[in-house]
Length: 297
Image 1 (cartoon, rainbow, N blue to C red):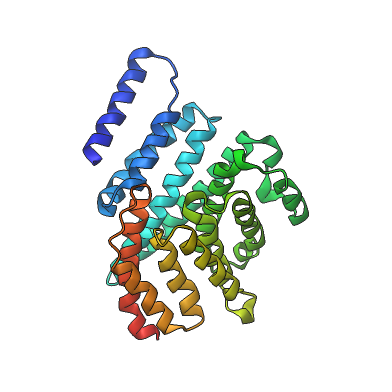
Image 2: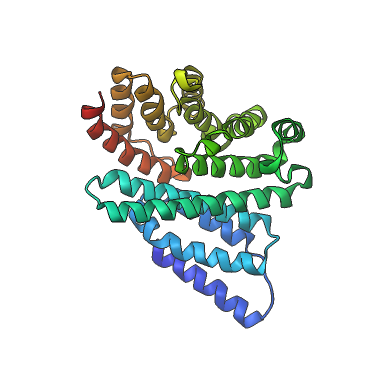
């Protein structure tokens, strides 16, 4: 897969050099994103993604107002952050120095993904510009105009913001932005709760379960969102089950539910091509959670 993608990249670059003119890369960027999503080989994707991200950087430098390129870049940056997290989780004996370097890289990538998704949103619809810098009242007012035509960019901004929040979870200034992120994903599910395999519900499950009740968290609301994600996708979104176990089950110390969810994921033979990479990572994450559950509970 990596070989074929590289050949495609080189072909496009050669065409651009030979023609000496600007061509649209929107179709290419979407195909690249889908190829990554459908892979069941996280290691190959982890090795290949840096080259693709650099390629997109170059394309964006030449086409800074291309909302599709910016949104695709943001998605792949988030994917890479997740792959790096999977590497940390599956290698508990990794050195402290290497862990720190990976965490620093994750922070840079999540910052970049959030910036690009915000710019893409602004280019897509002027009325939804500068959401991150708006007061909550302004933020709420702006989101009221969002419709189905905005959902891809809205979801892109929300997922990039959540990724950024998870990387900066120890920063209370980051935590303070949680209401805006929740409102974005609530807007997404109000428009189409099935979008991206009920990703809005899955993310809201995480957000509401990040903190215990004593610190303002709403894990029971998070539980409802996780269950909605599982119900709407008929259990095909394995990551929803894993995050349900990781966030809700652990913050409420529900060992029985944790075990049931993890075993369900590990025993799944479901193949869903459009989210193959996510489900493969879910299985890896489930195995890591199973191992750490002995000490946690």
